Image 1 (cartoon, helix red, strand yellow):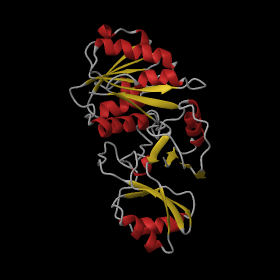
Image 2 (image 1 turned 135 degrees about the horizontal axis):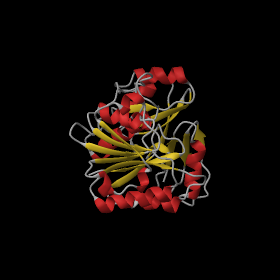
Image 3 (image 1 turned 180 degrees about the vertical axis):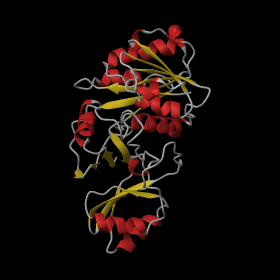
Length: 311
């Protein structure tokens, strides 16, 4: 089948490596348009994590004018998002003639409509590749948040904002809120804890080093200096959410996750799988095989994946 994968910025080589090593496919792309990788023939039902969105039924469209390009897309459906690597001004003028969609940075928390959205890319001034069906409800598969440069103790806060947004989008999971208790492993300096307490949740934060002073004095935060992975669920007590952005070997993270699932199979959990060198794809599949869970690559991830387990 024809298909086109849109890689995350500056991560095209990781996407190609995943196709080769995870799917055991030694096939070269038919064409590359910036971060968009097009295959004339590709096996069905193989979607890389490093694709921010996928053109499921790509087609090529020629046009003479900006109005003709916009009209061709509107005849197919309402919602279209752009990915552009060339002819930027021409692409902007085409987008202005299409029905409005929100392409701006978003304020957290945000609601993303579950509305089908197509993707198109200009190849040159008179040709585009497009697909009405994609794998993401997010325009071009990329969500960006309005950044707070003053209050969070680290930029890691953007990662939990995105992962919580994805949990709500994919599973309808409500965000942590007042009356809920969260356990965060490896919480220092407190970027994730900062987001959680601002949502009104209580946080049991564990790390060897303390959090930022304003979080250490926050009444919603209970801090313990410890190796979080050595604490037993019974020592923590009942929780609604479990979070980890700890740098550790994926094998250890999987063992820790399974310990908590044995304790509470319906626990909401979001954990970053940090890669140590070459990716062990059979091991990643063990995370994916856990019931009621999904693996995603976030816009704010780097050489890592995010595992989401929610009710």
